[in-house]
Length: 268
Image (cartoon, rainbow, N blue to C red; front, side, top):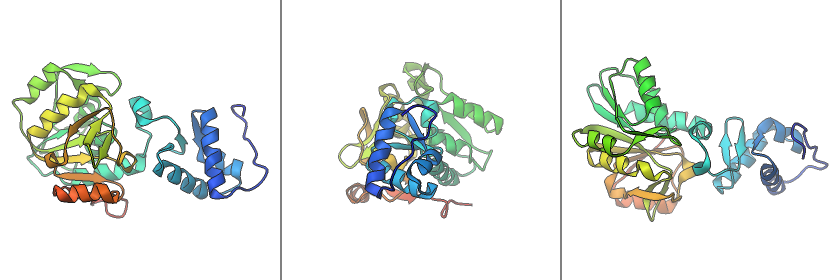
């Protein structure tokens, strides 16, 4: 299929056939758009969205704003990951931000979901500590007191890591921490695709009165490069969909609270 031309489908396909064709298209190009697929398969964009959601549930692709990509999340840079599951991340961010109270010291981890928390903060009478320069800059625009950890800038995630950042953390304590993860599984707990962020996450968890994990449903029962926390180290998971039963059972065993963030239950 030549780039820039819309391939016309000769006959209408059933959902399973359409989904197989979507995967074939993605193997030939880096991204497909809902509008393009609607024309190819002669169905509505809503039908295409349902097909994409089914394929995403099978972890065969990842949704972007207006389309889908085949590449695994761990191979994408920060700019591309920002596009994935955008609505879900916004809802998660709103719910997470609603938990924060005035005069608290909170840690906001680097990540594409955690940045949505910084955009939803209601109170200026808090202190935010972060290892994400992008989050720190946004909080400065909101005039919220912010401490940015010093250290080495990790290029793929734009997070601050290394011995200097770890030393900064050793004298700090937090009322709440909001931690990102690349995967969560019933067998191995929380994991991350970037090895260099591992020690920062562990130190923050140790020094926080309450640990909140913000993670979208595409990462359920998924193990990434390195594990950094078991379920007994966290208090709450904020996500966009109900957990698979085995993962839910594990959370219940360790008294981990689950909050499902959606447009209908985002706190006002």
